[in-house]
Image (cartoon, rainbow, N blue to C red):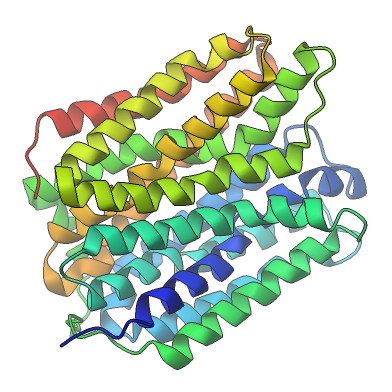
Length: 390
């Protein structure tokens, strides 16, 4: 059965709209700090709690095999709607730090029904060319993640709440679009019964396990880099006279350029193999981690921007490739669960990384703390080097 041409664009648009919830708080972080009298380490905590919510959600979704037992499109819509509600609750007056954490946690929780479930829907429609399809899909995630920074720049003459309300509306719209147009795919195999062990048994497959380990190494770096992009730009600006960046716009550019890299990586994978392309991207990203402290000492803002943009590309280019390897080496009836549990563990790792870098940043006045980001890519490279995946 030939997949209609409109299916992938609809999934991409829906994923883009809904994942704008992810960094909605980061896009207005300075406003949250000022309006609700938050401490300087609020960035790390409010970003981490979204990740923790996502982890909790993916664990629940994986344990109860929700994406494999129910219509993925309906799961996606319900999650998009509830995520939009909790995101919008940030606009309530007289918030406390605890209430902000609560709302961001549940925003992350329902993102678990958006990102991995969106990938599950794509695997239900595409067998051949899956890497390219997931490249477009993860590219949509990247653009959605970067969108709040762009909205903040565009809406700078409007109240900060406009960014939050816009992302909530987009999430609802994306979920509605997908549930109306995209039905269950031809490669969908529905799991008929609850299997609480499914999310653990998938790791018995060595090829699956190696692909997952590569993904885990990639995740150590990814979200911490994204969260600290505005700070990296601010640090460079503070250390060099006559440098005046548009931080919101530049942050959007650095993160969003990764969407192009995801698509390019999908095409390269078809020519050079998925594993080789993923390995190359992870290696380049590791090199960027190691070079990061040095770039602050170079008095060329053009070179600094080029470096960040390049890092923004290679840091995410391997993500859809690892997801492809995971999906290809997982049992057909448990693909949704496999993708979800790998996301769960991967995002648990992002919290550890983010908290470690946040702690070091708050307590050690040195650019060299960013070398810690290289730990994950090195681990992932070692895992890939020792395996031959499909």
